[in-house]
Length: 284
Length: 295
Image 1 (cartoon, chains in turn green, red):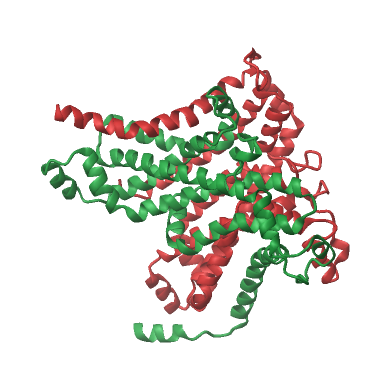
Image 2 (image 1 turned 90 degrees about the horizontal axis):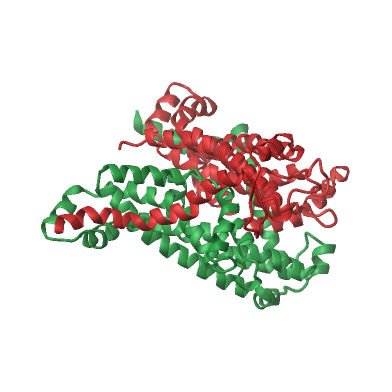
C-alpha cells in the first residue's frame, strides 16, 4: 500500500491547475529577481543609457562604476559597517551566552525574575526608545561615535539571542554538568569548556542573525550619526545618493556592493539563518 | 567560600545583560512615559510640566489620524498578502510536485529579505520614477500607458506604493517561516488525506492550515506589530511621508515632531502610543510561544 502510494506520487500530472501554479510561481520569481538583475546590469551603464533606455544592456559595460563608487565613499561606509557589525556580533555572542548559561543552569527566584526581565525586553522596539536614547547618548557623550550604534545594537539584540541560546542550553544533559562539578570544574570552566563548545550551531545562528541586523539597521544609523566619516552603509547610501545627484550607475554600483555580503551570507549559511529567523520570529 | 562563589556567579554571568537592557532599553521606556508629560526641546535641559496636554494634542491631531490609518492599511495589506499568500506559497513549494525546483524558489523569494532597506528603497525609487521608471515603462510596453503615473508624487497612491515595496521585500520572510512549520507536519497526514480522496486544495484546508495554526497566529501577530512600527520605508521612499503627510506613519511622524519641530515631549507621547499598540501583540506572542514548549 505504502509502496504503491510513493510510486504514484512520483509522476507529475500536468493538469491545468499544476500548469497555472507553475506559471504563477515563475511570474513571482521574475518579479523578485528582475529588479535585482536590473540593479546589477544598470550599475554598469552610464546615466544617459539608464535614462533613455531603461531595459537595454549597456553598450559598454562600465565596470569602473564600481571603482568610482568604492573610492567616492562606499569604502569608508563599508569599513564602518564592518567595525560596527563585528563589535556588535562579538559582544552579543559573549554577553548573551553568559546570561543564557546562568538562566539555564540555575532555578532561583532571582533567575526567574531575570528571565522575565529579559523577555520583557522583546516587547520594546527601537522606535519607542529612539528619543530618550538620543538623550542618553548625548549625556554619555557618545552621540556621533560608533558606540552610539554598537551599544544600542547590543542591547536590542540581547533578549532574542539570550532566549535562543537558553533554549539550546537547556537541552545539554545535566549529567555532563554534574560530573564536571565533581571533577572540580569552576562555573567559568563549565561555561567555557562544556557549554560553548557544545553549542556551536546555535552560536552560529546568533552570529548570522546579529550580523544581518547590524549590517542593515537604518533607524539608529541615520539618527545617531551625523558625521559622514562614521556612517554605516545603510545611512551612508543616502548621503552617497545626494552627493552623486545623477550619477546613477555609480549609485547602483554602491547599492550592489552594499548588498553582496548579505547575499553571500545567505548562500553560505542558509540553514542557520532560516532556523534562527523562525525560532525567534520577529520582524524588523 | 566556594559555596558563596557559586551563589554569586549566576549574578555575575547575568550582570552585563541586565546592565545593557536597563540602560538602553528600559530606562528609555520609562523616560518616555515621564517625558510625555513635559514640553522640552532636544538640546535644552529645561523641561516644562504640561500635564495631560500632550495627550490632548494627540487626540485632536489630524496627522496622527492619517498616520494611524496608514499603519492600519499597512497591517491589513501585509496580513493578507504576506501571511495569506505566504502560507499558500509555502504550501505549494513544500508539495511533492514542486520538490525539484523548491530550493530555487525558496532562495529567490527570500533574497529581498537579506537586502538592506536603504538599497531596496533606492531601487524602488528607480522603479517608481515618473520619467524613466521601470513600472511606468512596463505599463507602456503592455499598452496600459494610461495607468502610468507619478506613483510617489501622488498623495492618493504614495502610501500604496510604499506598502507594495514592503510586500515585495517581506513575503519571502513569512513564507520561510511557514516552510519551516510545514516541514514539521508528519507526511502520514497527507498520505491519509490523499487516500481518502482529498484533492490538493482540500488537503491544504484540512491538513496544512490546522497543523500550522500556531505559526499562522504568530506570523499574523508579528506582521501586525511590524506594521505599527514602519519607519524606514516611508522615511526613504517618500522623504518622510510625502507628499504632504499622505504617506506618513506613527514612527515617521514621531521622528519629525521630535527632531524637526523639536517638540520632544509631544514626540514621546506618540512613542508611548506606538509602544502600547505593539506591546499588546507582543504579550500575546510571548504567551503563545511559551505554551508551545515544555519548560
